[in-house]
Length: 378
Image: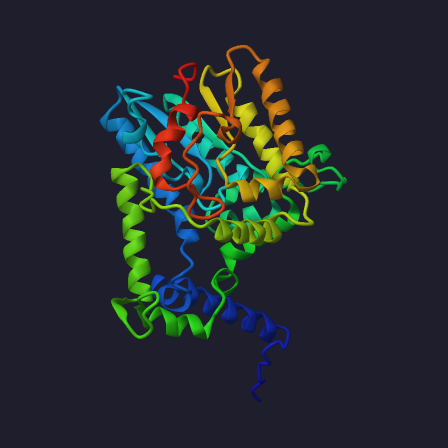
């Protein structure tokens, strides 16, 4: 008599979970992402392609060992600074721009650490700081496309206790929630790239010219995004990561007021600064103190409208004070060269044309450069 083998019932849920897990991986395929993830969401690529820029930096070092390295770390507001622009300030130096949309201190610390571990001859480091980059929202983009597994695992803060003042919180890396988001996006494609039927349609539809409904530019959304990614890769090699600011006009005050209100409401109103970012800012100072490397801690130029709102409830004054105190303590270590520079309070900054409440017109950068890189830094 033949015995029938019964498949253990408990195996079915495991097999189902395994099949769903494998099915999810299909949505990581580039061709699937290109068609299902909105072409307008380009921010993640700025983060992901910093790995490409890092490789370019290593190649350039091998090709030109006589040249030193300049490191620019910050948000899109620092994305304009390129190596040619800074050549007159730092001769015989290749400046690499690791700025990214809302690039927070955790992102800055990651690439600083990678650069220091590569033992590159660093000529100077530019660090951008302001309350927006220290907000809880600022880390979202970087969790999507930056860091590596080992780095996050080593930096998890398992026992963080909450305090009313984020500057007094004893943070020790990424919070458990932040680490969870990072690994979920690494493991599950549909968590990283949520399926959106409207995005599928938009990605394969020709882009319409603004103000002229029905008139297209002749390429689909996904083709436009593909071309833009190619442009980022190109500037990694030609401009060492910098993206030229081709917008050279001043927007109307009424627009700047509205944009400043929207920015403040979205990122800062009713929220506290993130202890994670405060921790990584202190880590940046620890990594650079005592190394004889000029470090420019830079408060980016913002519109008067946004600056007024950031002063609400003493947010900006408290932030600036804490940053200066931290830099002052780090400067006490011998062979430390820190410079805090705030164009917003410098009378030499006279070109104040803004495209939006955050971004200065490209025409104003020549006025900004001598303020950011004074003789004592050079």
